[in-house]
Length: 541
Image (cartoon, rainbow, N blue to C red; front, side, top):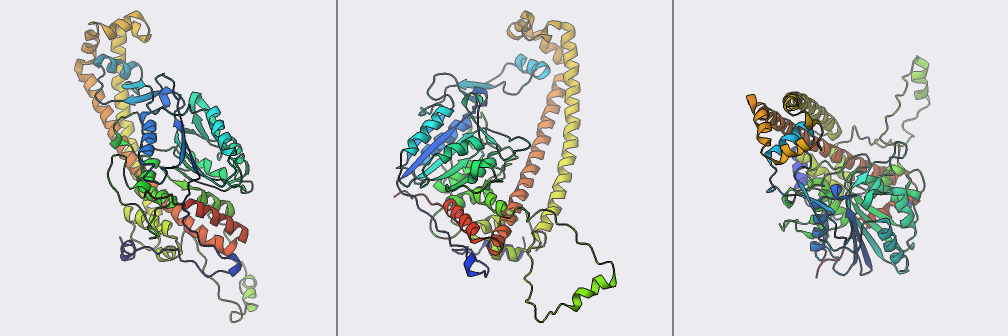
């Protein structure tokens, strides 16, 4: 870490971002932390699409949110919860208890003839006593209720569930899954949001895979090619619209839970889901923690594969779509006339001094810090330190680091493949031996197969698999595969931190250029979104 970054990390952040000198008619309005009043409605929507996709961590997310609602200023809010199959008695929830033991013969058959994934999972009914199921009907009923209120109010929608990709031609139109595999697309969700009175603003917190597509609720019909909606909306999302998100697990051990909303609510409440007290982020030193500061806290501290994104990020790229596209190479002058004639008519003394062009590839650390607002500055400094950046040109250094990690990942992938090939060789060998003795097991429902699983005849199968230590060799290679995958995953999480930092740098540059190049209307709209993102919910008295 160079001295500049070290000094910046130890220096209190300013209350407001430093702004460059700009024309008065394009002045970016100062955003203020907006403290919510009592007119607050919260929709908690989540769970899986079916029992096999409804992991216990999703239920735990809702429980955690309920536990800290007073701490984050939602004690007086009206909250509706729609989760999985609702109050039905069916076993809609999947969980994994490490104490649950699987018979050896079942593990052998699963490894050799079937699949081991989910073999230790169990099911029960959810314990949330929600207001209803996660269904289109429930969602529509909530929106109908909000439509009846013509007063100014704030809506918060928290979705903790699964998501799906958009189509190739409409990648922005991603999906949130409701119960019974019902798909709620961005375009359909926007139609529901459009029904709300114009005086109601809405904030989204969504943690599903491809959740970043829902940042497009900013636009008419949820389409980034169209104009910005007249309705005021903002949101925070676990990852960009083309990536899966972290977090869904049937594991009952909460210490293993790492996902976006865990860190987001932790930042706002000052308390982890395990009860540990943490220092709440206050990057602008105003004594409060805004939603934007909580989002920045996630970007800094979340050790996952997520690339968090917010609505203002998307709006900046809407207004300045070509900023980071590859520039066309300018043709060099091919003759003396072409080279020198323009200079004959260029009076350098009379022309104004050119402003230095800001480019991602050439901007220095001091320049970025000068332009950054408090939240982006905190993200930039913290991620730079985590990644061990030491040079003055961060983009150049990030490219070097990316190449280094790519090579490491490729080497690990080769080793993983070698271990996987060995595992498959041992598996196929055992499969042949068992089928030679018990050809009936090719059908998992054959009576002989059932007898082998449930009677003393299983001993013969176990005797076969233990010959020449083949089973033990298979398990050894399986552990090697898992070890290499863990190493690859560690590298991916470093690569993701690079992606987060690069996005942060882009945000800083885009916000600066928005002020210089865009219309007053665009600047004002961006500022409105930023102000909503900087909402501070009432602190517990």
